[in-house]
Length: 345
Image 1 (cartoon, rainbow, N blue to C red):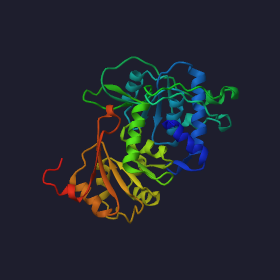
Image 2: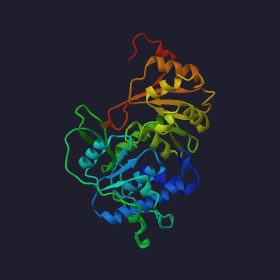
Image 3: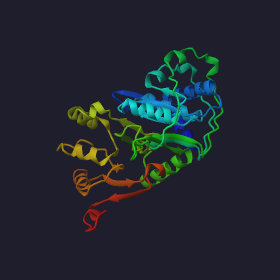
Image 4: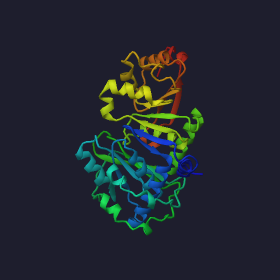
């Protein structure tokens, strides 16, 4: 069973289970499966054998997850773009990626559920799952935006199950990072690479199926988000996304965290340090949290020490890795003994 089949399985055995929460909007596993199947069918009918990437532009909306899986189920990698990015950078990435289509949450919401059928997947373990762009040379390209009217006019007979042919070495996603020169350059991640990463994470942390709530702090255009997104979907967990507006309003942020039921905290260290400014940020606010997973920045001994003190029943983990190696390649549990070593890294 590959990663996509594993995610789809939750849509069959627990269709009403919550897959994603963002700004009080929820997405169930049943909806995720049906709507991503419908989108895959549409993309297959429209583009045939063209495997150009599909750009997904939004900000942590549930429809972004539908777009990600719909693209991959049609054997096309997705390119995640956050609306917080400068328009010039978005345009540059679209040109560099030569995306065939730009999907927005508004477009995806128009998909009629009655037409949502399950396509047959062909993505193998070495198929690219996503593409992350770093600095590099540019290229010419044009994006075609899918409008709600396009989907509404799609004949029901076309919403059939396409045969998926994505193999393990096929692209799953393409991510863009800033890099040193400022010019976008895409990093292609295959299905096999993503599956290896998720398998490693699941073995390391032994997440409880249908028992985890993962915090999603990083935008989907940042590869840290892959850690919470796919570990959550692979285990039937709930992804709890916090928007930039919520982050900008500490009072509402802490209220949301208190009611979130988060069990696995995934963020940059600087975000956790920001939260630690609030004295009430402790296991009283997050009684279910069992682990903190960090990546993307340096985790200071001060931040780790404060977390261990305030969350006595939780583990603190620091991970590191370049984007090209799929999120992270090293991981260590930080405890009091490590913090007391004379030569910390």
